[in-house]
Amino acid sequence: MKTILIIDDSISIRQVVSLTLRTSGYNVVEAVDGHDALSKLASVKPNMIICDINMPNMDGLTFLKTIKNESQYAEFKFLPIVMLTTVAEEDKKQEGQEAGAKAWIVKPFQPDKLLSAVQKLIL
Image (cartoon, rainbow, N blue to C red):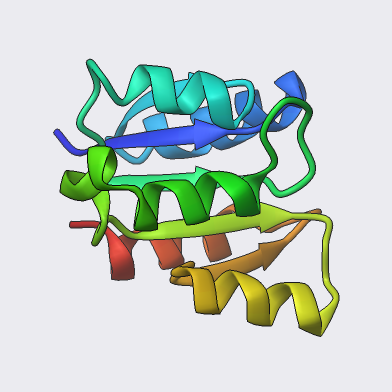
């Protein structure tokens, strides 16, 4: 079973995304922000990450840049990361793509669209 790490400070978003993914046969691990996610990577080896942008402690773009560029996370460098966020500005999307995001989905999202992205990108 493939595992997806969801990073979002909103419990309701984590619940909706988790339910959507679990009912489609994925194992889900949840994190409340980038720091929490980095600590979970010590014990969880996800096949994909779905990450919000606006979070306390460590935002999604900082998390993305950390996982793609820091040597201690080298094993995750090519892991597909989907940004699921309310941020729709083109400059932020560009920054996310340059940092390594494979897809950008704007909230509110349609579960079918999320699942489609997951199925196309998951390792």
